[in-house]
Every structure is written in C-alpha cells, then in structure tokens.
Length: 342
Ligand SMILES: [Zn+2]
Image (cartoon, rainbow, N blue to C red; front, side, top):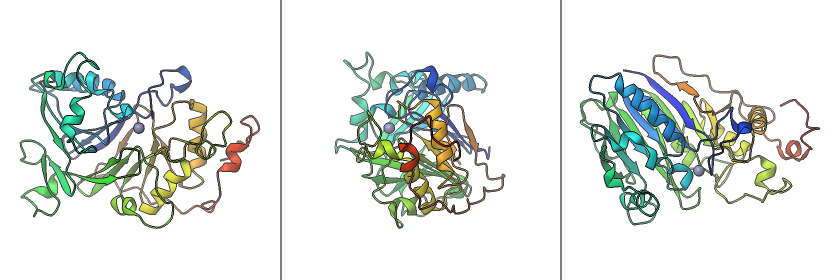
C-alpha cells in the first residue's frame, strides 16, 4: 500500500508517431500513470491513455469489486494531451469511479472546455456518456488535492487550510500555473510520504539562469519529468529543413537539464520528443544530456520508476564540468561525422 511508482504510457510530443523507427521509445503522446498509496493518478490523456485503459481494466478484474478508481489530471488542453480521452474505456463503465481535474485556461472553466473535446461532431458520444466519471472540476489556484486515507474521493481544498486528521499519510497534489507554454499550462507536484515527483511535459523556461517559480515548485523533488522536445540546433533554427522552434513552448536538452539542476532534482526523466525524431536521434539526446545532468534518463513507453519511500533516496547528481558548454557545435555536424563520444 505504500508503493509510489511512476509508469510512462506516452512519451511523444505533438502527435502520435506509429513508425518502426520510433518503436523503442514509442509513438504515443503524453500519458503517465502514478501509483501512490493505493491511489491511481493519471497525468494527461494523450494517445498513451488507450494502452493504460486496457491495463487498468485488466487489473480491475483481479480486484474484489472489479472496479477502476482513478484521478485524471490534465496539464492543458492541446491535442497531444487530450486525444486519448474519448478512448478511455474505463470512463464509460458506470461501475467505475473516475475523477477528472484540470486548469481553467480560458475563463470558461475546465469542465466546459473538456466537454467540448468529447462531443459531436468531433466524437459521436459526449462526456455525459462517460458514466464512470464521477466529477469534472477546475484545479483551482492556491489549492491542493488530497487523495487516500479515509477520504471517500479526491478532496480539493485551499493550500492555506489547516491539515486534516491523517493528512500526512495521504497523497498530496499541488499545482503551478505557468505561461511557459502557448495557451498556458498547469504543472503538478505529487507528494507521498516524503517523496515527490514533478510533471512538466511541455515547458520552455523563460530563463536558464537563477531561481524562478518553477525551481521553487520543483525544489529537491525526487523525480522531475521534463519536456525535452528539441535538439539545440533544431530549437535555434539551424537544422536544415526545420523551422526555428524558439517560442513554441518546448525545451531543448540543455534547458531541461538546467531546470533540473536549478531545482536540485534528484532524478531527471526527459520526455515529449519531437515526432520527427527517430530512436537514434533520441538515443543521441540522452547521451548529450549527460553533459549537463549526470544520470538523466530518457522516458520510453513501459518505463517504470520506483519512488517507494522504503527505498533509499537517489543521490543528487554531481555538477558536470561541461555545464557551460554549448550543444550547438555537436548538432551542427553532419550526423555521419559526429563523434561517438557524449
Ligand atoms: Zn504537448
């Protein structure tokens, strides 16, 4: 029951890429499952949610009441984070209990906005046909979400409110509203029994220097899941045939590593790869990342990270001497003549 595990079901940015050359990391868009203290939390509903749906249904069959209970948290409403929702099969079963939360990024309220994703003529059914969904709520500014303990379901309450009995044993979800992605975004920090993860799948930091709001939010987290969509050359428009992507709301490898270092994150997992990048390119991104954050890992579909409190915490990575170097020189070389070193 004290398990705290993170599993990746979709690690691709922008659009799904069902291509053999993308097979090792996977072509599904953003979806991460968190199991903490017996609670199932799902971060984003990209196309990876479909595979998770099958797994949850299979797991429910092994329980006494054959029911799926889950809390689905949306970071924002771009297609690559929502396109799995209409195919979230457990949500259509009235026997299940699915709670959905997300940010109000339009002023119309999150329930209104998410409703428009699942309705004709975009999809033949509506959100009200999802009989397993118990509630859809705004994740409010300066609020925290509590799960587990004796609570009958997720409880969203003011961050300033005094603790409730047994809160120390509950799962706590905090949010950081940010303008570091077009149309804004909500980052999540999930804590359980002294361990935590921060989910920032789509992020272009405003600065790579100093301590910003994100660094404080992610301070000393055990696991930072961070956007690493582009190579540095691609980001700056120096990759032949590709546009400059600066300002598109995503990071290149070094930015992600710098964010982890600024926050003092204990582990860094890179995700949300550009859909044009094949496995070999993502391999190279992982090798390059070691120049700025020792031990940075590349997310792939099926990857699980154990944050269970009974395990010793991971060591903080050592500062790297190449910290200030640019990555551009490497990526500007012809791929056939690139050195094989990191
Ligand atoms: Zn995205």
